[in-house]
Length: 250
Ligand code: NAP
Image (cartoon, rainbow, N blue to C red; front, side, top):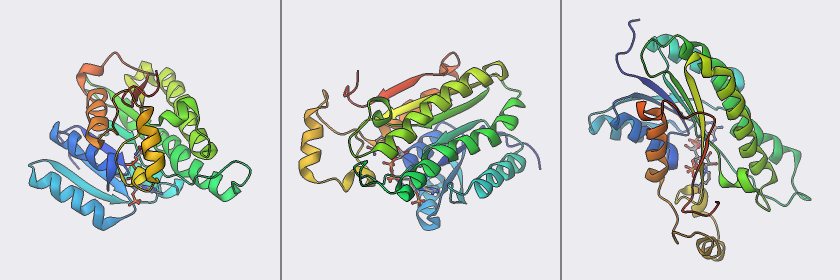
């Protein structure tokens, strides 16, 4: 098949929350965006909104915790479009518990979904990104968390996965720089999505007190930073961790 004229981006967790905002923003920036998640109906809603706004996007239903399925998906998408320019590893889950009570299953599932998936995707994306001919090379953007930067009681599994993403990203940045591929991390603080909606009001109030800007962030405020990192303007930025958290961690 002929090469897609647009830059092609894959965004995991594109069915809602931060991922949906990233899909919409990158499509607005002129990229063709593949939105990946498990819920086909929610993905279709996001893609329909992109298309209604004049953008270009498609749905890819996949459980990213299944390495074979996810690796094959990325191979297939790179073949189908003749290119792969941007990979945003955004999908993530929490299974919070105190470390004394945390089950192996809660630890392993979070690591598989949040961290191993990013390794699998990076390995699959690197080769097509190396073949890019344009001035803007490959861009890998991993969505971590301030929990991965400073740790968080009750989130040993999640914080380990998110800290792991930072080590993975810095290593990938060093390894792939000579191939004109950058790899950076965005570490959100508290963003208003389904993930934080479930927290008790008392915790939400306590957290707000720790945020200098005194409010939760919006998904679009993460998408804006991802948009920058995917753009030509970020050509000399690699291996960095950008906290987007209203000043909570500095
Ligand atoms: P969310 O609203 O819970 O959405 C999570 C997304 O990940 C959904 O699209 C979900 O889609 C997808 N997903 C989860 N497991 C998956 C799997 N096995 N395979 C494929 N897709 C999967 O979360 P969010 O708040 O937007 O968070 C997005 C990212 O930002 C996560 O990595 C999260 O850790 C990080 N983050 C969020 C906050 C925050 O305050 N919200 C703060 C720091 C970091 P399906 O359910 O349809 O599969």
